Length: 343
Image 1 (spheres, rainbow, N blue to C red):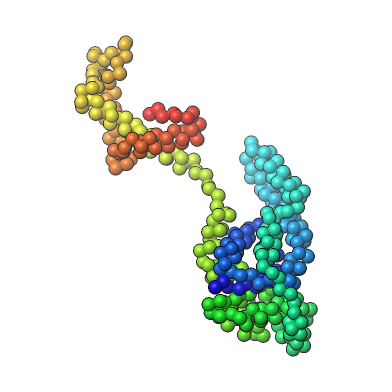
Image 2: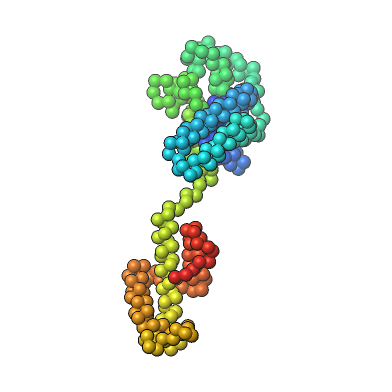
């Protein structure tokens, strides 16, 4: 059965305002869609999220604009003169769009809103109100601090009802970033306050101060998959790597042509001749000067030593087509026209 998950409003707001948290939202969407997680959404959480939406959008916009200011300073100081103006123009355009569009959180708010509304919100019953009052009179957490903690106490009492129906096969979990009101104030913040610790009797119930840590524990591989999908960007090869690969392909293609020529000589279809027998006018494609052939044999030996005979074939037509295609592509990157395969 699915784990029942009650998430404090502060967690949803922190996920919404930072675009880097999108892999976490994606992982939650995946777990909920596949019935591995069932959200428990108090009406209070939904209302608090709605009330704070405008503030979160404004904070995200200002945070990104501040980030872009730092980037512009770095470009001004370290940017290549020939590209500096273009880079700054692009950054200014993005900064302008952030300020105009307002939604600097990349759709995170809309995605979280859909999650919160995907299940019926739980109303605050009279029984819960009564228990909140009793908790306040007893000064039990979250009333152990000198502040109005009605909202936090409502979450606690709602979680009490969730825990009541929990089993090892159908557990529940509570996630909050509010360690001051919910965590052990004198010890490990990752553990619940002494007044609340009885609610988190594992494996039926667990207490978390990080959604990421909950996901890593509950489904270790899922978050990594979504993080890879969100953050992966293919890094361009460095020029030395490209030149090294181009050189290897060049030697392989040259050596293949050399071996074909050698086969022609061995079978009598091509001839190695001296200067006096070499025909320059008209040119004969079936002749090679003996001095040129000596140089070719020496070059072949150097290639075998450099590349390794095991990296010089033989390969079938498809494999040779791939090698020629790779050489053409790398030469195009380096400035040649397509299909430049001279050796």
